[in-house]
Image (cartoon, rainbow, N blue to C red):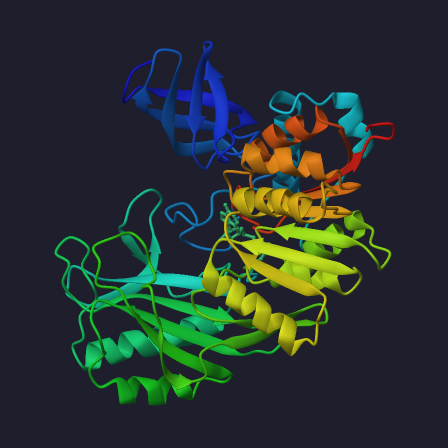
Length: 466
Ligand code: SAH
């Protein structure tokens, strides 16, 4: 097939990015927005030797799993990839994605996975789940300020203040800001020229406390007539923290490196279970609080703490998992690369009266090996102990030096929380070749309507291993 050819195709499979896959005379086509079971007319956009990419032109017979998207911009917007697939199907897809990676990359036997994989944890209401949103600002052809989301793989803004994944109050806040910009002719930032002021707004909403944080990212030091904007935003129910983060760099990085509080306090508070967390604009915090509670409960269940254990929480962020586990452990050590997150972690321990959690700044793959070596040095060769080690790395997974130290520390259990099942599978293979066996695997849907999936795994040290 070649570019601009059209064909009628039966969608029979789904790719890792949620795209439909089908064949025309043995030639494979990837079709964005097509669902398994669709019969559709497609047009080839890009043709390679053995496969190509096609655009969905017309659905001839819709799949039984196809649903009406909740958002009118679902196809254009880069935020959601699989909103047109029934939620049940989405869950199935994610579970199979994890399973497929464990089989192919991890080399785990299908029989074993049948036995140990627990059903994916889905959401009851898979919309409006995000507690955080970052909206870019721009200018439309008529010169009006707009905000919304980037179209897939571009930086073109699709105006939309009513994202189906975000909380309803986002819209009220965005309309206040747009109104204010129009009234005082305050220009949005323009990536192409580097001019204009308002770049992004970060909105965070505490699901339990109903506290709201607004942080405006600006290409400058201050916003003219800021007092008017502050007064208007201040009237929104729950507004707790309004700040600006100057970012004058010509970069894709959204936030600046600092934040100045303009009104209220510099953080909002929220709860996961009984633990209270203070969240500042620049800290990482899980975006789906309903599912996060389930995720951490699962990590807790897999850690199976009795009360006296020594636990390491590597890649701990603001100490969320560490403090959760500290409720049932003897001592918890958290390690995280971002100093500000560790400051938040220590503070969060203090406001919850948790005294058995200690935090270290640094790379997990350096801090743990150094701790291990220096412990042996200081204790006449005796090795450092850990009963349970939890890891929750970014997408690239764990460094080999870290896995190596984990193996040497011989914890009874390793709990692996992962946001990328491919690197998870790679790392599990290493652990399983070095004395650990997979005991349980469970996917958790933290990001409905997208192709992302979180996984929690329990590994136990094989008995008889020295
Ligand atoms: N467990 C936390 C955070 C998980 S996100 C939670 O559930 O909220 C992964 C974290 O790993 C981020 O906070 C990131 O800053 C941190 N990180 C990235 N590379 C790291 C490394 N090499 N060593 C330690 N932490 C790292």
